Amino acid sequence: MNELIHNLDADSLSAKFLSGNMSSEEQKEFEMWLNSSRENLETFQKNKKVWEQSKHQMSQEHIAADKANMFRQLYSQQTISLSRSRRKILIYKLAAVLAIPLTFALSWYFLNTGEVEQPLLAETICEITAPKGHVAKCILPDGSEVWVNTGSSLTYDASSFNTNVREVELVGEAYFEVAKNTEKPFTVITEMADIRVTGTAFNVKAYSGNKTFETVLAEGGIDMELNNTSNKKVSLLPGDRAVYAAESDDISIDKVEPEYFTSWRTGELLFKDATLNDLVVELERIYDIEFHIVDKKLGEFRFRGMFSYNNNLIEALEKIKRTAQIDYRIENKEVWLTKMK
Image (cartoon, rainbow, N blue to C red; front, side, top):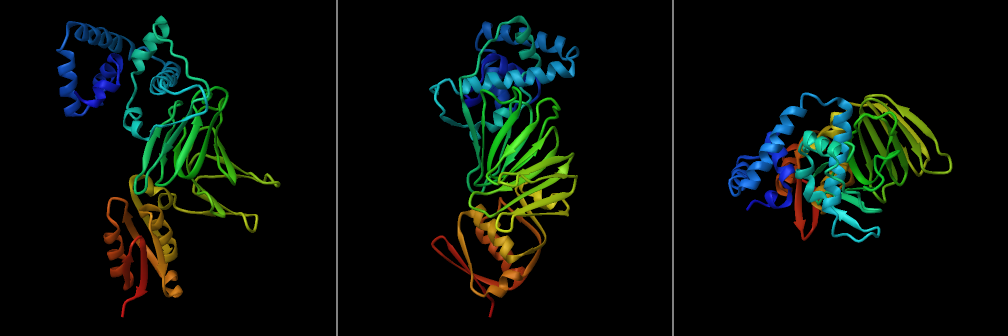
């Protein structure tokens, strides 16, 4: 039977069906499960009744509280095999499950009748990672959506997240659409700087070993604070791009078109006026390969266009070859770029 049927309980299955979030294949598996026993059918009918009665009665406060509660239940179920030490659970493969509207009406019903009580394990550290060439998307317990770029990771303590504050740690690049909650600020912690918001959309680039930190604000407002002796703070407006250079201890802010810095979350790289040097950095990150530009002057060649994560390395190199008349040679996991003769 479908892996989804095994992994979700009867209530979650019912909610996934009622909310219209099942594929045709999953629906067939669900109907088989439904008809396999009278008990399954009665459970579904009860859940359907609760769903229909409660979906018109729920306030936004109920929905928000229910959403957080249901995520706590899911995380508790998924981490049942963990010890109570600070171990990590990789939830990248659960992204598809976590991204559905999770049994809002049903969990609200159980919450109020007291039939569900599953406390989180102590100090459960969750980690969302994206392997090379892929982008991972997840929904945090507070309903915030996060896209994690290739080779990046996001971690947070599921046992304390969304209590008084909402804190995550980022290594690499991620795009955030934060659920608004003025009473519980959302903080992104990185090696060089922290970002604090209450509800907004923004991009953060903070790769380990890099000497720069970058954030681009798409919507709302954010506060940025450096993690050094100066603790310098800046506030950004939509369209602002802040770049901190560690070597000069300087923050520069300029106006940009956010889509050029956030398009990666849909598997695309948009370049308006990027150099070959800029492009190579991104391709190295996506394909886990090293580039060598033989003639340093070639690195200043400027590009405008789009590269897709779904394309293979050869297609990307062929696009560079056609656009800039630059030839390439591949040896093992290294690419050599030279001017075409």
